Image (cartoon, rainbow, N blue to C red; front, top):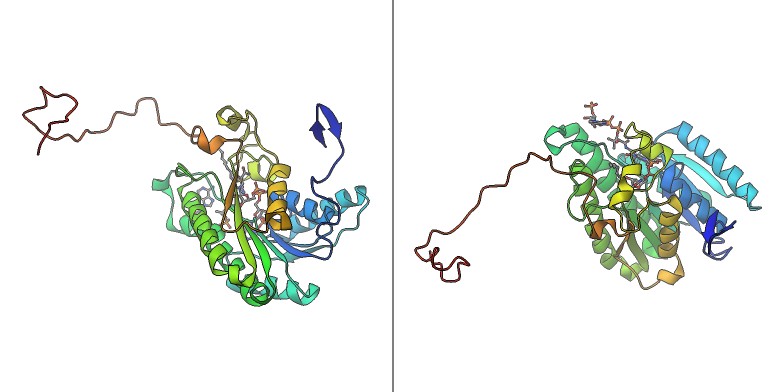
Length: 307
Ligand SMILES: CCCCCCC/C=C/C(=O)SCCNC(=O)CCNC(=O)[C@H](O)C(C)(C)COP(=O)(O)OP(=O)(O)OC[C@H]1O[C@@H](n2cnc3c(N)ncnc32)[C@H](O)[C@@H]1OP(=O)(O)O
Ligand SMILES: NC(=O)C1=CN([C@@H]2O[C@H](COP(=O)(O)OP(=O)(O)OC[C@H]3O[C@@H](n4cnc5c(N)ncnc54)[C@H](OP(=O)(O)O)[C@@H]3O)[C@@H](O)[C@H]2O)C=CC1
């Protein structure tokens, strides 16, 4: 349901029905939150979708909900489930090869699966750092590499990666900020390297503001996203549909001349105040560095200072 000039409209995508008829996509993390929104929209548009993540129960529950939802729109779902931990190279290889074997092709890869935990960087243990970097950066690399080598290199395709609002660093999520900055850079590199194979590689960077039950549960606080709205110029949090429509656009022929790009989906948040953390009120001004000069008192602006 969305609003159009204040009136509710029952629509399930801004894109034309059948846009992705006959196409095959993998969406990692496709059973929950943003990934579930992307999966629904791709299915609604006619795509065959394989959702993949670590937890079999999550995949089963998500798939059932998605199938029921699609049935209510009057469409048949070509939805499939494969377990895969993107941190494990053999499981990633298997995800891609099984998909290609089952459906004869792989048109789209959406590297949505990922996440992190909140911690001051000083307190992150190496295991935790590695878990987050392997999930978000290494996992994205492995999936891109396998999708390319096993199918897209010879047949073309489109990849969309997942970044975040890490443009000015990400206090208290330093591991993920660093990993996602790596994803943005990798996206540029692959956009150039794989252009010769007609493979486009782009990314989306949602603000810290896309609420879903699973995303909030990861932080043990159902309302964690509510506080974000005050720092967002558009004065509200975002929706999974608003991420999904950007992903579906990047996958579409409408984005045929876009590669290596990362689109911010954050209501202007990253151009305004960063981020949801503030220094404590009693933090002191830092030490000052200044040249010593006999002219300082004559020329307070320092224009005639010398070493
Ligand atoms: C106003 C604030 C807004 C905040 C949110 C803003 C934006 C939101 C962005 C989002 O991305 S929402 C999506 C949220 N969903 C997820 O993050 C889901 C996926 N995440 C995870 O699965 C985990 O966070 C993980 C760490 C990436 C992987 O966990 P897993 O259990 O598979 O890892 P392990 O190999 O078992 O252990 C990892 C290691 O990591 C450390 N660690 C894990 N959790 C915590 C924690 N909560 N606090 C501190 N440290 C943690 C720890 O060292 C673990 O090892 P051990 O020491 O336990 O042995
Ligand atoms: N919500 C937000 O505001 C923002 C979200 N993002 C990113 O968007 C993506 C989706 O997040 P969101 O939907 O909000 O949160 P969710 O917690 O609902 O989604 C995370 C998904 O990633 C999957 N996942 C996590 N680790 C792995 C792994 N090692 N291998 C395979 N799948 C994995 C999870 O499934 P399972 O547990 O079954 O493995 C889950 O489906 C994530 O990358 C997130 O970090 C970025 C910026 C902001």
